[in-house]
Image 1: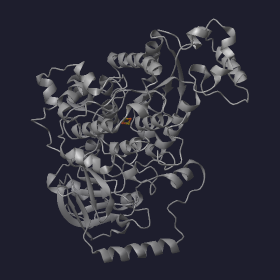
Image 2: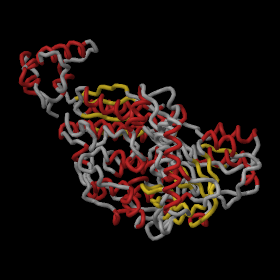
Image 3: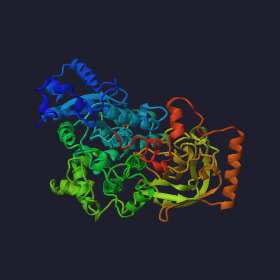
Image 4: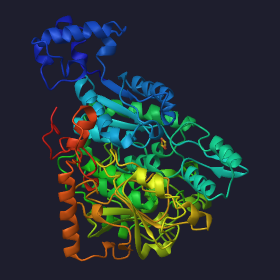
Length: 608
Ligand code: FES
């Protein structure tokens, strides 16, 4: 393979040739540090990198950066060191030079107040480090929920060649002969414990088995959803979505990604050219077919809105329209019964995309330079009984259409999202009932198990104050727990509404991402009161507070006045990252990104 500057490698003067140090450049010559003398900048850069022992030959190769998101606080990324080693092997066997560097790492359970609060920080870190350093391509190793969207957002904005590499799902565990997996079974068993169906000894034993290996959650939660979506976008090998974190196959995917990175660097294949509207339509089709996480709606909006030609082109309506013609095919928790390891053994994304072929845009480009149609043609897949048990044929879906639906109405004029396929009581998909309102998470914690709470199984539980600003990072608290007295009486599901998010591993009849969020003074969702009648009808996509327009206007004006008199501000923090977050974050329907980072904002998107 020809080296990056083969023609100059034996000419010592060429090393510091000013004309070669001027943009656009590649390898070490690109993005020089500003000292006012480009010759000197390159001279100094070479002096310092030689301290690491690199030869001139090594430094003449295409440089592939590898983002290291290992953290001892992130068990979902515990295999990153092995992946780096395998990816480096792939880079260097193909004539490139691999150089790793760190960025922020986020784990769901170790980030306060939420990992979502920090997603945009990670995306800024990713974007700026890719932009700042002399990389010809960059392998981005991510896996846990917010890391992959953060890396895609940052990578698209930086617009250098990027190659996502996923850490992969964990294996399922076992308790008394029953398979278990984080985190659908975390929630199911916790609910059973709250309902006194299992005791403290059993829930403790279950806790030992929920995450039996390293890797991302083993069900179709947000991490697995984002992995499948990244493959559907054409940004990585299809097997890369599902190979277990602890498998040798995962290491071979890393090596393949390293090899791909060298050819992508040479071809200068950049994400804003690879990704098109068709790529996103394919990703949304896959999202519905896998019964993916509602979080992916927010992330995909943020990712699409980083692309100058797609900002505003993909909307919540796009998700609903595609959902109406896309069946749920994957029998995985929380919509079905199985685990990511089963999906992988059934053929994974290759089998799924072959099944979905009539619904896909086959002309969409992929990272390899081939179209999606060409990738599928080159990788035929023959179904077998087990594959069709996990990945159902179009003729025998798990759920006929619209596993994720967009709802609108007078309390959600900018939209709300429900994972209808995860409802545990389908009668609730068309339901009217009296609201029981909780003002925020603290209020919920205080009163939900109060024996005197005026609640029945027909009530509609409302949790306000957990939107993007209201509770920074829009926590995954939308799975409002059932009041203990109802759970103990055998109630398994209730209609629940919030402006927050829900873990992709959770299930129930849950309306999320209500926008505008209740923290905003003119939010219709913010004026719902206990006893109001709420109607939700999935068939007609309606979410309505049964009061007149006039009463709603009056209540909003009263609330605005009261908040103003109290000196209340929804953007009250001034300092540091939280201040930046509150000043800049947009609403759920736009992706909860910072307005200045979107392609429409005053950003540097599309420039180098
Ligand atoms: Fe990392 Fe679930 S906690 S993927």
